[in-house]
Image 1 (spheres, rainbow, N blue to C red):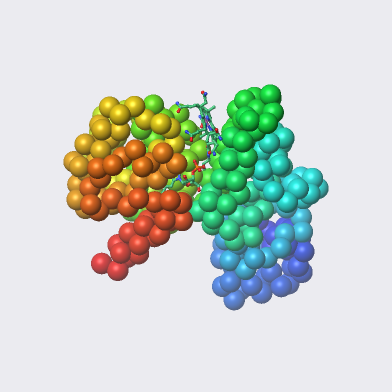
Image 2: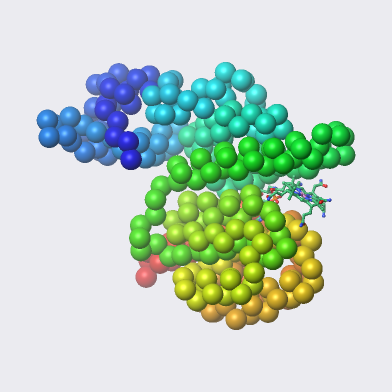
Length: 283
Ligand code: B12
């Protein structure tokens, strides 16, 4: 993890170095000291401070966030424009800028990311280039989401595990990746099995990881045998494990354990994960 001097962070935020030193000394920003006594701030701590205080960034490149400056220079106000146009640098910058302004992963997923992907799906009907734009846009979205994933604070090794993925026959990468990030932001250790996961693989992974939460993301029209196999397996998941089912085609699972939560958004998943993490702290 990169360590920033007070000078660099002050310049990035457009404040004086003396203000920054004061914030470190009063504990608003955590820092270590070099042997020579100079304050050093981990980049992750700088990001936490920026998000918590909504501090504007005047020179993002000083924090290795050149793409934020690129998105600003392009000037679009919607992520969807960059995803549609295949502009991966600006898409990354746009998303990171919103995250630094304090948006949560769930808010970004349920808002601009969903909107951008729905837009890609609509192109099919209006534009002959729809399919290539859809494939290109999905990759742009995945790149942006992956970079954002790297900015989520690392959870402690003792954090409870949340495990999930998409069932067999479901090729969709983005929703289950976002679910992994949402649980990570809530303080859980994510284990994402990704798209097209055999039911047997879910079962083995649950045995091995003993998760506190299982999420299933269903975006494709599943063959009824696969839907049935998932429902039957969910009945065998230990009663101490929370289950959250989401995705545009999730209603295909008609028989679910009573405790399973049918979620309509990543915000719902964030609430369940957050309550499990809080519950652990209280016990
Ligand atoms: C990208 C994409 C593809 C890519 C997927 C690439 C990949 N590997 O990921 C590819 C090219 C493979 C593809 C294929 C097909 N696709 Co497609 N695809 C899309 C598209 C554009 C985006 C999907 C996406 O990633 N969305 C982003 C996520 C974040 O949004 P979301 O799914 O809405 O999820 C939100 C919530 O549902 C919820 N959520 C989702 N999962 C979970 C999980 C949990 C636990 C929780 C709590 C919440 C939650 O939170 C999310 C954020 O709010 C959609 C358009 C759309 N409207 O979604 C079409 C779309 C889904 N596809 C469609 C179609 C028709 C197809 C094909 C049949 C095309 C074809 N003729 O081959 C195939 C079918 C593939 C299959 N096996 O099922 C249609 C589906 C129509 C329908 N059934 O209603 C859509 C709606 C496009 C359209 N408007 O026509 N597709």
